[in-house]
Length: 471
Image 1 (cartoon, rainbow, N blue to C red):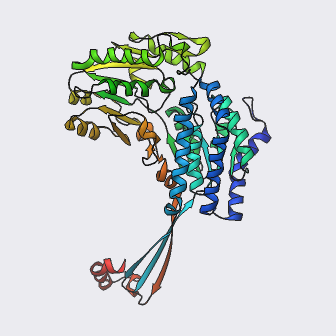
Image 2 (cartoon, rainbow, N blue to C red; image 1 turned 45 degrees about the vertical axis):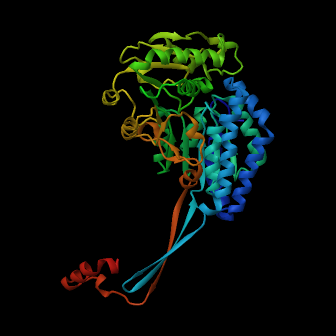
Image 3 (tube, rainbow, N blue to C red; image 1 turned 90 degrees about the vertical axis):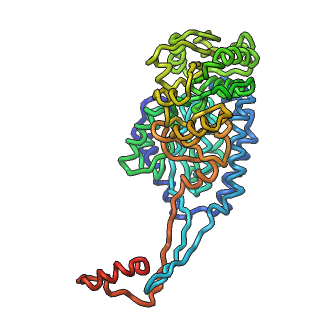
């Protein structure tokens, strides 16, 4: 098993050879049929169902994740995605044809989606089952073979995924390779046909740089500071409950969690009081003892998140225990402008709450990250909704809800700008992992001789007059 020690020359050769081996198999048997793809998806679904307990235990070992969250935010999302993709795959992958009559010839076009070939998928540690296997579903549906590299920062889950998947699938179809950043570096330098990466902006840039050496297309799912705004019409106990749930789900380690909360001055104190009340109701007065609250994944990330706590006034929480990798749900107010907690993605259970007086002024201030993965607004004011939706560059803007949109196969999930590029989920995943191939067949009944040299003014006049019929 590849571990965190330095790789040997043989291990490096093995890793670099994976895409070529998978391509050779693909060339010998051709693109898999729809039925074969659906069979592979069914095998993956069976794996998830039969090993639910083992997967839940691994998630608890890595993240202290409650069983309810493990099923709802990881396994159930994958099961729903498999069902949806399997149901619609035949229609998505159906060839299309068209005819185009021109002066002198008839073009018959036949278009079909084609798999890229051997795809590298690098998973993330915060949802180590869902974010590792969700792109695999799209890759399988599109007819690719996959090399999967789970995050080394969720070692129990990575080990289990390797064991389960490598027992069910042949290495020419799907293979899991575990290891540290050196393994990932070797893999990203290999000649894959497409690379899918979920993680930080910093690492995403490194992956893109490596892939560029082979002109390998890349899909990057990164992060960002997702703004959440509650205007004067959007405050309610229900809305605060949704926001608190979305922020502190998975101990705040969610790429689409509300990062910073902006509350209209008129309801600011009410919102702060309600946030404290909801947190107490969710996790009790001793959240470290709650069975429904997770842990921080790594010591390094624990250190980063705890440093945020001292950058404002603690309105709620603030406790932490390094030995247990526990950070209490924490609410901050009165942050100084320029503080890292206001500039960096928090990715943890710390919620800065900031009052504002006017939405247009807030948007004009440049405080909000326009190209975050998503933006949240709680409001019944249509002008505010339209204004916020037009302001945000993110691929989704969510009004009066958080998180749930990312579980829908009907909604493409992906970044823009600093939050990445490319999208997947549902049909978007099928399209992301395939390309359109067109076969053109031309039937000539009259050839236009004027297209050949030597060119003449007469032919130029004819071309300009008949360009739509000729070209």
